[in-house]
Length: 271
Length: 271
Image (cartoon, chains in turn green, red):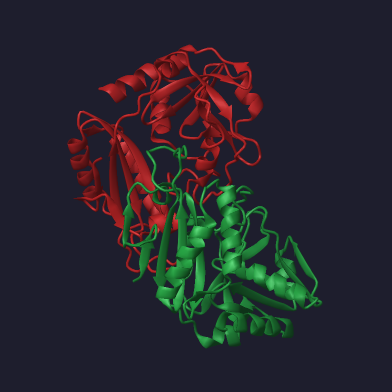
């Protein structure tokens, strides 16, 4: 497996890394086709937001060059980029000065059943709730125990994803996807200012919808809103868009807006 | 620096470790004197609770033998034990089967100013709030970005610790300590069923107080409760007990129950 640490081929890193100690860092999961990262600008923009909010000093230009070189070597697959606060002495206080560490891991593109994109997926209703932490909301940081717990709730492959709500029962996202509703021709997705991960594909879907002149609303989504939706779909940076067809006995059809956006996203990923 | 990975001297570990990827694991910070871990039974009990709640299959007997051998080699200082879910493919689903990884890191015992234990410490009022996540509350898991953010709020060494509250403003704990109040001869500490770390020294203090016949209450603590307390103190597994003397202009004296418990804990750590 291709892996680099701080720009050099390496399969190991220091046991003193704060990514391990505290999950003190960020990551991006990037589709790579023909040696090129997909949605690169969006990945870098989200990473930049995370670096600022976690006060991680890193030269994004240098990182981009490194990422491009890695993707060129990888060719096809998934590039996972991690940025940690580097090594530090024991204790939570950030090391002064901080030398962030870059880690790049290559893996094959996952092969999902074709029917996930075609007929749609069933959602497992996760009981693990997302805690509200505005200081970390939206970031793809390395503190992901909630997702680990949620994903461990089901093994049945009949469920391609799990639905996660916050402590108040608001519908937020999938375990590794963002969720969209279509209602009366409008697109709805959860406000992610309290919890959740602001996926790069979510940002792309929002931009594509805006370009199509579709009204978009970000806000609170109740379970009733979800069940009343005309169409429901998931998205992430690797698979693009999957329609949702079932949750706990409630069925949705695959609708026209889902199909339209799915085609646009598919061509972006495949181009 | 002394460090072992899975029982063998090693300074590095795989970039695929889930401790790095997701903070998918637990840790213990253990005082070591004369080659012996202090409060060993309490550290193992908390770890066991965490292993069960995170469904990490690990032989505690084998781990204890390894820890004792490590402490014997370390002699004096701090043994930090990490247990992660080991290596896995990309994705949140726990690997089947799971092979947890043990990491042991030695460091010198930190040298704190003597006046922290003697005159007491000043608390920095952290604005970072602890999110409510009952599934993880009490555990010393590797998702510690809240503590990293809180500890980065102050650099002034006049503050030895920071006070953390939950989203509702309830007083919970220090960034790396638990907090106790004394009021009318009773000992109060926060209920940790929604957030916070159930420290091993907290458990020891509770047990010592019970043995002394002191009434103990675990529950919600408001800021008003804190300010109205007769005595306030912090505890952790390395420094034992520090009285709290000031928070935002409010002063407390070092009281008799704090001093009594401090002496008992000191002799436990030094014995």
